[in-house]
Length: 420
Ligand SMILES: Nc1ncnc2c1ncn2[C@@H]1O[C@H](COP(=O)(O)OP(=O)(O)OP(=O)(O)O)[C@@H](O)[C@H]1O
Ligand SMILES: [Mg+2]
Image 1: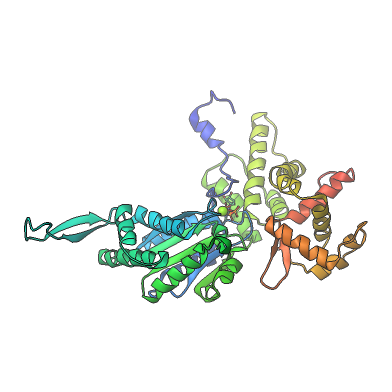
Image 2 (image 1 turned 60 degrees about the vertical axis):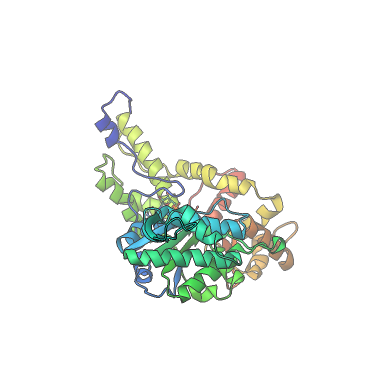
């Protein structure tokens, strides 16, 4: 498109698709049952269940959390929280500061009156003055309470609720994204994750409606349970799945329709996108964005609509999304993951037994024994490439990684990107 064209025309061709971490899609497909479940949790008067929203990379956790926010606010809740990506080495004190900071952002305009006691006998009249629930007030309450971090924090939170309930608030949601980054650090005698769980369990027992909504990778929930076994009962876990075929089709077609876009995806193109992406939301946005750009360029050049250039888009996706992750693995790790990729069930879940008995493992110059495989799977889990579920079964932690690995092999053998 030429820059000199009128803005309206440029706008008409604007690509609506948004592949990118945390970017709200032009149309958020599916997720009705998750929204319903969230509304059920919002209806609790005593908080018995908090929420863990989990799933692989790019499944739509961040945008769904963002979507929940107005729902909660409409129901009278306050919404506090942040993204914990940077919080690897958090201490108990810094967790307390985190919670009070996030809370004060939403309470700082709420007022309460305090009695100002006379000083030095200058006057014997006590005065009522108005103060706000800002950060200084919350920290004042925290510091003014003797005891451990947990005692101080509970006191500050209980104080905030005593005021909020007078203002008719329904409760407060504490929403933390990338919460798998929270950890206890026994060596440093710092247990911020356990502290978080203890605090919420304790205040919820006192009927204070402060609810935790944590999102993160599938390592999150096992981590919570490892820190405190009661976490098992404290959370409703929602595991996000890829979109189904119908939802994928809506994710593709609705943005075009709603924006009156000049290009259209034919039923065959929608079918192709489903075949390539298998409903993984990030991939849906990615492939649609690329296809849309190609069509707009073709239209400008006066060419007719062509089928989606699947091979080229997949090759671009391979280098944009997968290649960096693959490059960080060692040769031996790649051998192991290639053997995994040869398993028919590699995109769902597999066992170590299946892996070591596979033809691909047996064909290696040095086949993996089960103890070697176990060790390496643990390292790959740490690196975020493999995920071990609660039943001890494994899967790739990156969606559709198996297909990428098989394509790599095809490239090496002199072929080109083949779709499966
Ligand atoms: N329901 C949906 N319909 C259409 N597109 C979606 C949907 N959910 C997410 N997306 C798109 O998928 C991409 C990834 O979403 P998001 O960043 O929320 O995933 P995530 O699970 O938080 O990923 P990560 O684990 O990397 O943080 C974004 O481009 C977003 O627009
Ligand atoms: Mg995210």
